[in-house]
Length: 215
Image 1 (cartoon, helix red, strand yellow):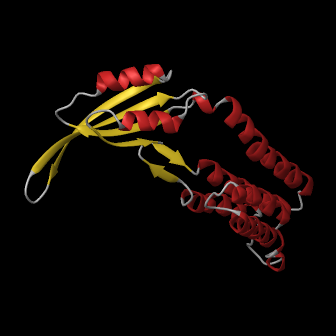
Image 2 (cartoon, helix red, strand yellow):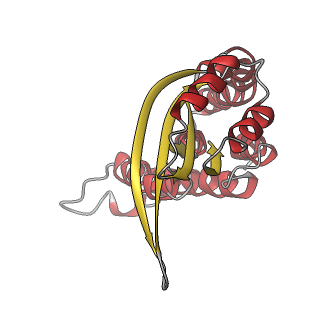
Image 3 (cartoon, rainbow, N blue to C red):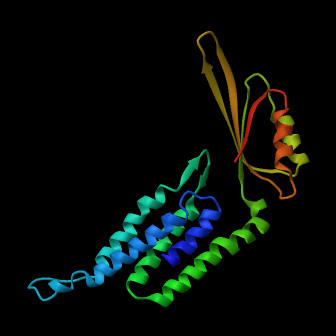
């Protein structure tokens, strides 16, 4: 309960879907299953043709935790969120199995390392690597207006680099009329010093732009 809760507390403070209680339940459940796997069938050892394998239930835990972890992963557009939380659930399951097996030193050491990874490395990543990760810029524009030159000039002015660009033509059929539009998707690198709100506001004011989304 304590070791899983320490990891879950960090996820709870970061406002992720699987937080304190989820991690505690996974870790305690894993510990119980490991105890059951080791000691729960001792009365049957003396029976004929019976083989006890403590790893069987532990293997089922590691396999089954994938379904719970998949529920914390969110896919929106071209971005994926929740992978770290899913991985932390998988690790606390292993921590619970280690506690259930009496492997306390490894369980405590792993918990400390997981918290360092989630908390300390997250701060370092936000400080030194946030400007190196591609972001997704999605624009919906009028079909008849070419905004690419103006968009390119705006991004150059903010020092934004484009890694990939996709243009999709769309047709909206309403009851009375049909309208055409374009969806522009760009994988961009935004420098840390760039004000994203100012950039989004500048793009939104370009002629022909209907909507702006940055992920």
